[in-house]
Structures are given as C-alpha cells and as structure tokens.
Length: 470
Image (tube, rainbow, N blue to C red; front, side):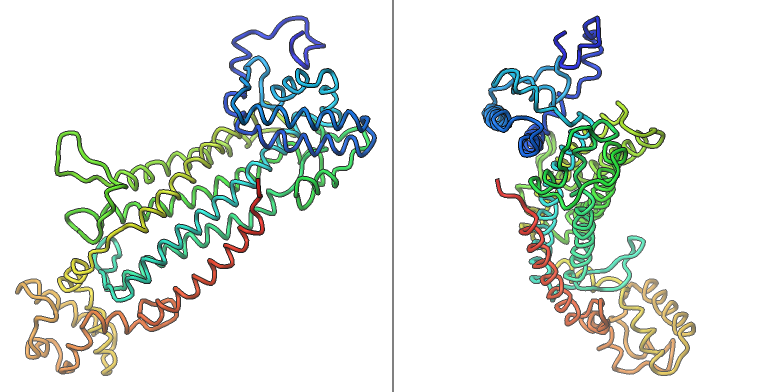
C-alpha cells in the first residue's frame, strides 16, 4: 500500500475520500512547527537509546534538509499523503531511506499535531501582542499631540459633555491594553507540551517528555494523555481574545468612519489608507476601517464554529478536530493584517482641531456644568436639572447656545445665576472641572498617558522575553 498506515487495508483510499479528508491544503502552514517538534523528538529518541544515536543524527540531518527544501519552495505537498506530518515523513524517508521511518517511534499524529499547534500559536500570540503594542503607541502619540484638543463626547451618539480628544483616544489604549494582557496570560496555557501522549494513552517506549519540553521551550507538559490530545481550549481561548480585539477595532473603525465624514469632519485619514470611487471622482472612502469592521464577524464565526465542533466530542481525538485549524489560521492572518494597518493609519491620521472646537461651541454639552453650578449654590440637583432643561429649551426656541445668553436671560430661570456662569461654561473649564482619577481634565489625561507608557514598557519587555529568534 502507498499509505504509511496502509498495512491493515486491502484497497486504496477512494480519491474523493482522499480529497475530502486531507488537510495538507491548509495544515502545510505548520511545516516549520512540525519539523521543530520532530527535531526535539528525534533527539530524545537517541538520548534515551530508543533508536541508535547514529539514526537520530541521520534523522536530524534529513529533517534539516527537508526544511531547507520547503523554505526554498522545492517540495510539492501531496493530497495522497493527507497531512503535513505524513508529507514531511515521506520526504524524510526519500531523503535518508528507511531510517526516516524510525522518527515516528513513540508518538502519534494526535499528539504531534497538538504540539504543532501549540508551537504555532505560541509564536503568533507574541507577534500579536507586539502589534497591539505598536497600535497603542500610535494612539498615545496622537493623544500627546491633542492634550488641548476639545471634542464633543457622546452617549447614544448624541452630544453629551465636552472631553479632550486625547482622553477619547486613551480609552482605546486601555481597551487594547486589556487585549494584550489577556493574550499574555493565555501564553501559560499555550506553552504546555502534549507530545508523548501518543494516540491517547501514552507510549510503551521509555520517552522523556520533560527533555522534549525543555528542548522546545515549553514550561510544562500535559498531566493527562487523554487531555493532551483532545484539548483545544487554548485555541478557543485565542479565538475569544481575537474576537474581543476585533470588536475593539470595529468600534474604533466606526468612529473613524463617522469622524472622517463630511457631517463630522473631525479627522482625515491619509490617502494611503483610503480608496476612491469608480464613478464618483470626488469620493475618498475609508475602506480599511470598513473592511476591518466587516471582518469582525468573520472572526466571531471562527470562534462559534470551533465551539460547535467541540461541544459533543467524546475523548479523545476525533476527525472532527481537523476543523480546528483553518479558522485559527484565518483569524491570525485577519488580526495581524488589521493591527498592522491600524497602527499606521492612526499614526498618519490628521486631526481637525478647529472643526472639533467649532462643534463644541455649537451644542449644549456644557449643560451639566450649569446644574453643578446651581447645586454648588445650594439648589437640589433634581431642581437644578429641571432649571437647565428649561434653559436649553429656551435656547433651542430662540436659536441660541448657552454662552450666547445674557445674564438677565439666565436669571429668568434662577436668581442664583451670576457672572461666574460664563467662566463655568467655557469648554476648557468644563473639561478641566473633571479633575478626578480617570477623568478628562488635562492633568489627569497627561498622567494617564504617562501610566500607559509605563505599561507599554512592561509589554515590550514581555515580548522581548518571549519572542523567538530565528
């Protein structure tokens, strides 16, 4: 039989079955990880005397040659060999002869593929944390340039209270900081070695799992062989974290789309991150944030898809679990692309400070401060709330804003008003009155930026400690 496992079979696999069940079309992405795991496994087999030392060395040299040929694009993977593991083993045997068949001693494709995915996701998590760091840095740079820029703050997409634009941007720094924190925490659950679990029950050979873990940089090994080959929690967790990141990117995308519209004109995205219309020459479309907003649903789908695949599976490995990879690969590509683009797009974004100030001067977002002013003079808040509501209604009916009113007009609604109300209502006064930890007052925002920069230093140190040199 042509199959490496074909000894028990009397017929060739139907071609349609081969095509339907083969995973090589997508799991070839695990080639580097598969060879990395095999190198450590071969070294352990030789060290333990399970195979002769010279065979272990021949396998090592053969694997390095196969890896070099893969990197050069000289190897064509075959569907008839099903998956990346069998393809590499076949090419190894072609390279060094029957000795290559000893590589699979003491392991199964079940623990082998699990190891590959742990290695793959371990690298990708570090890369994504680094990309989040770059996006946070771009947001912080824009925030530092806009600590005097006042913009309407919104609730229900209705103007609520004026805030510093820097304060708004720093909200996203906090969101992406939580995202990085979640990924860094997940690393300890990814960095666990399944190899040595065999198909489900371990192996009869005297392997040394802890040696392999040390060779591959894993912190520990799975305690239970059944769990080792059937666990996909670490992928589900990654997809959940990725979904949160995409949700945050989608929220920022929506705001960038709104802010860059003619109706807002708060920002302008660099031409390099926009496209035009095939029929309307005046158009400048924010396609990047729109597409990221759309791809968010794609990532959500991968999370729900894998949860559904796993929900009724008995222990240990089942062929259904082949469906764990494509969504993971696609999510990594989608997330990395989005983060790379967003960091550059935010860094090159132009902020229309004058337009933001104009908007602040043409609304009633300073109304709450009038209520606070009256409360400071002894009026109960609920009564002050009613007074300001009537004052705003008067302004709307007369085509005015609060700062346009004369003192006599103010005093129509309460005798407690005096000249100080005009200072209270200035946008700068409204913003800086929120001088509490986490508030929008300039000193608080500057302090928040400093804290965020310290946190970024810690993130950069984590990336440096967990990154892998080629």
